[in-house]
Image (cartoon, rainbow, N blue to C red; front, side):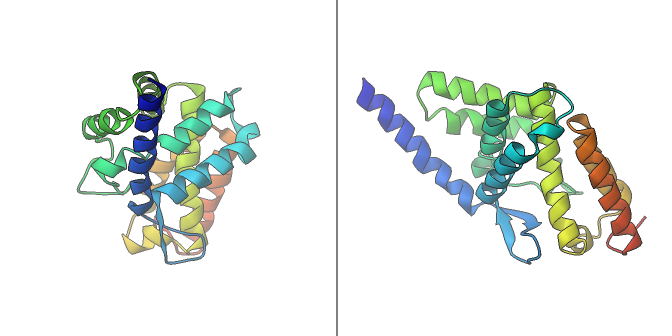
Length: 196
């Protein structure tokens, strides 16, 4: 019995290696190299540890860490959708839910169920943990774009109002991080990285 459980867990570990091959639109800080989903998730996890004190509400940090580490695993099947895409809705949750069920379903039932529920909680963004995790998920690429003189905003000609609307979700989890982000957006307009 234990061998079968371990084999399922190892199969899952092998499957999620594919996350390393999913390239995002965002580039690394001060770079033109695209970030992959594994790098993004790792970065969010470290950010969660370092910035947890700025959550507006008390949070279960372990739960936030689980959220940010697994949230993009579904992109193995569903692919990455650019947050500012004008051709594909970023909330492709049915496709992503099917991916979550398949990929997490490789695990033993109890673990699969837990991770699917954590993934759904992140997507719904209603709990304090999910709100903070979503804040980080928006904050990291914003910092990357600023470090790259507008990065994907300039590359895809994304206007200020769209960047603002997408990133204002940061304030749902952290007023402090949102205030910081809003200042960066305003500075980006002044420097010509963003067009109002």
